[in-house]
Length: 251
Image 1: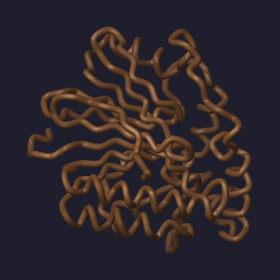
Image 2: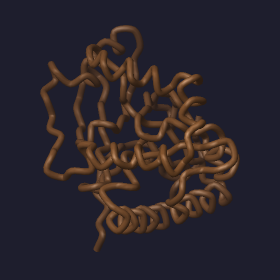
Image 3: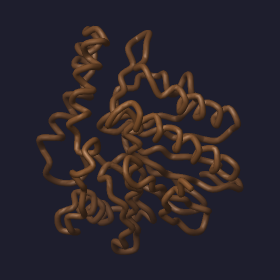
Image 4: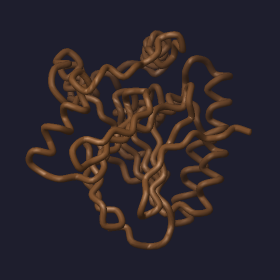
């Protein structure tokens, strides 16, 4: 349980790497500016997945790029700020570097954390809820150690090029393909929450993945989706009493 003074921040879906180097680099600088600002009162930062649009750690090398963000995160953990990194569907292939070198706590599945007496269910949000069986099969394949081993056999010049080509076709890389709220009867995460609450109470469900900002009251719980940073720069802040979704002001 986190009880010391300070605030807790949540952000997700930076998707660094898309749509191109220039835009990604500018977004990376904004993220670092945001981290610098919140570092003055943050006791914990939760990064809820898809921080990188593609990430793969070979046994002795990591993917090129994003050194500014990595350096800032290492600086913050060195100062004693607890940073939790949740793998998303774009950056699930981390095998120790982010924890060992940067000092983040890496989570590959959702967690329940008690923060200032409130119970939080926290995760990226992919693969939860009913339906979407095709994606769940694909996630199982990408999570299997054999397929990770097989991918590592390819030279990075080849494998990263394929991954980057796929990223350029993703919905977040194309700003005209907007994600919209589908309604409570169709949103997988809403359906997941309603089913979960039948067996256990949670004060807050915090997810990313959907690329939309939401603050929904579901029974006696709140579902917060913290959105993304390619278009909106949204995040959430919990001060020990209240939780609020905000947008980072670039001015």
